[in-house]
Image (cartoon, rainbow, N blue to C red):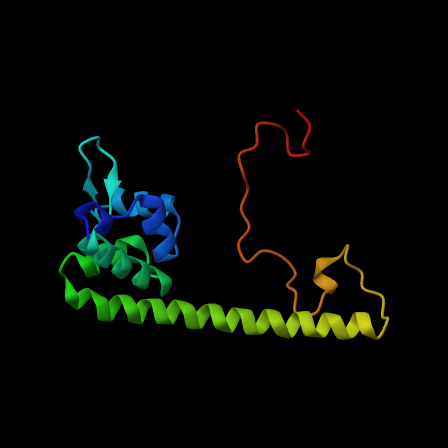
Length: 149
């Protein structure tokens, strides 16, 4: 097998990894992957490069940030446990939010199914909605309080 056959173009490497070529460039910019270069300067991905890139893709598929991936792959194996724990907490929080959203959608669907009037112009009348923002603050608009300039 010729030596060049073992090396992949960025587009072929991306296709095999299931990511975009743009993602591979981003991984390279962040120092997570260091592909080889041809004499003309084109990026090439050999077996070691593909192995490194597949580790990045696997960690990213868990939803870890590029910063977390960089720390983990940078040799700080102790960062993997805390990074995974923090990420799991975030995912569990998102799951709880989604469960609540599903309940609200189900309740609204029942209202619609029962042909009850749904005053969508008043968000506070929707099932599970809230009356306003949790935090309110004044913005320094360049015009008067009534919105006129």
